[in-house]
Picture 1: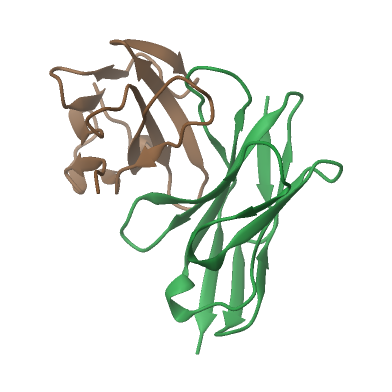
Picture 2: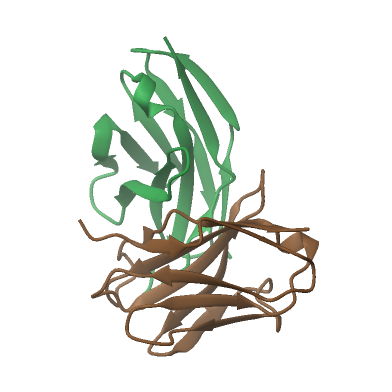
Length: 115
Length: 115
């Protein structure tokens, strides 16, 4: 079975500062890793995903994440945040196999960007 | 850009009543999912659906729940006799094909309140 831990429930940060949202996972099988963002009153939108290959993954809106297999982590980073990045961020895993794959989500991190 | 839609956005019901939550997945997608998020908790997988049958369901998805694709466009989640603990945000998602790395596109959610 897979599980995901997001270590921070809330992260306050000032505009134009860098930010890191932490995610650790556990799994006995190979997994795919994802970050989703949820803006107020909207659905979940995919930010980026790690499937294989380069461990540094770039996504939309200037976000990137680094897959670290030895530390079973997939932390999300942005060098300079904007007010518009204020949202809930979810880390998720799915198992590495063909066919459909259910997503296992972390509890979410609320990013609050202040002016 | 194609998107997943859900209706209604908010449903209020009395305990013991039946509710049907509706979703219109993206038109060329083949895999459909329901997830839920109880306030303050993780997004949890409920069920996946392919080729007119359930592919996998979680332990949450008991006999009170059912899913259906009544026509070529809608995908519904029915809760036969709602309980207070069914109050949550319900998300529908769809994905295109059969490989595990296919992105799941999420709808905006239906907030179900059971009184």
